Amino acid sequence: MNSFTHDGVRIAYVDMAPTTDDVGEPILLIHGFASNHAVNWMNTLWGKTLTHAGRRVIALDNRGHGQSDKPHDPESYALPVLAEDARALLDHLGVQRCDVMGYSMGARITAFLALAHPARVRSAILGGLGQHLVSASSLPLGIADAMDAPALESLTDPTQRMFRAFADANGNDRRALAACIRGARQMMSAADFGRIACPLLVAIGTKDAIAGDPHALAALNPRAQALDIPGRDHNLAVGDRVFKQGALDFLTARP
Image (cartoon, rainbow, N blue to C red):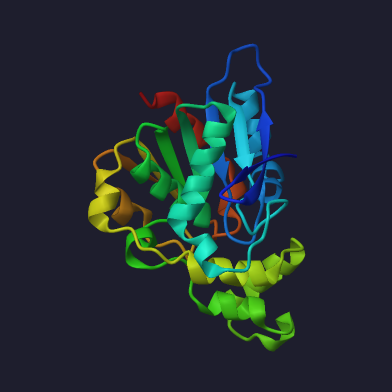
């Protein structure tokens, strides 16, 4: 992987050229909590799907994840800070404007990036995040407690167990993840979401119990549309073919 340093934190990333003869427009991919660029986007074949569609694919490991640095201070994970890491990556690569797709926590980061830097985001895809963008402050704090727990077996709450097992499977620094949950709790108001100026796609599995209603969120912005991913929960929706086709159709149709 490549890397650069922003605000004293090393951020790892990949930059993939399109596999067609067409000159591809760039798309930035921002992964979710306790994941990394490979698990979220490469293992689910998003990288292949997008490069085969003529796209230059840029994907980072958020701070605290993957091969990026992992501070243990919650203040290092405020959503505006994470959004500025993404903006700094675009600066580092000389990308003035691109499409951005995030999943779950990555969708929150995408929304904050689009609001703070409207000239940089041509369109935004929010996967695995609906109404809870404006009605809930990220994942429950109990997820941080799950990261601090001595073992998975000590947890009884299903959501805590799910995220702890996911974190353990990906070999994460659990202290960094706990700090991330405690720091990334900034709310976006409904009014601010309505001010995001680019086209928006809100895509969520119909069995997702974490994200919130995609249609309720899309109704807050006249440039937003919702996509239901049938029969998928929060974890399985990300690689679903309906999501991929809906995203490609959206990207093709956007101005």
